[in-house]
View 1 (cartoon, rainbow, N blue to C red):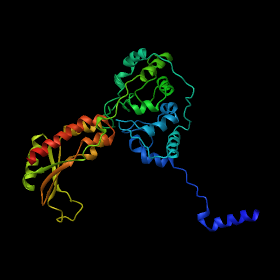
View 2 (view 1 turned 90 degrees about the vertical axis):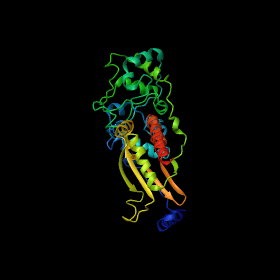
View 3 (view 1 turned 60 degrees about the vertical axis):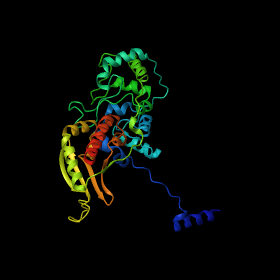
View 4 (view 1 turned 135 degrees about the horizontal axis):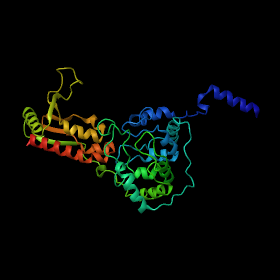
Length: 348
């Protein structure tokens, strides 16, 4: 028997196929950089997303809260869900976030809250609504440049968000109220002259909030707006420029679609892009979500084929769904309507 074990060991050394391959443990720091840092900052100091590397936040945020947040996201807001991360990868990210404080997360098991939601509503209106909104809908906009006031290091999150409500426990809500969050505008309720019973009533009210729904634009819409032109390429472009200027947009440039992709002079002259911008609208859109800048300036493409001339653009209605931010709905609908009006005017 002993000789058999020795023989198997030797064969395993000779033939790699017989070895037991141990999967390497996921790297939490690397996973955080890949999935979280772009919004929450390389060191967790915030950006488009809230800062995570705050002692008061890490002291009250449980591992269960982090797990649920990564799985649930914040529907209708900027924070996406991460359904493709494995459980061990989620745990690795949490462990990396915990390394900033060096302390384990709190254990909220067997903690029950019994409060008066009616009294909590009044307390919320008096002490919390100025930042979190009367219905707990959170502050308007996101980001660190346009929408965030210089004196506010964090935008107040949406407390009525279904992802938040499913992720946070009553005990964590109470602990947050009692502790406050140094480094943000949120003080402890004790600093506001309130007590632990007030915290219970506030938690009870927060659990009675009407949970905000995700964007109405969740259903897939056509990715491209298209119009057929009754004119040739040159006249369609001329009409397009007039329609753009007539709606207070400034023309930025005109270029061939293949510019930069084909050798200079060899581009397809029957494919042209027109870039234009309204700077007031630009500022408003960036204030809602800075990522909109990826799709600016506005652009419309004119294509001439043997069958005629076609005018097209991306459909802005998809942006609020793509960015998981319901606050973009109105701006995206406005932009969709403007694109459609400009293209219709240029082609009829």
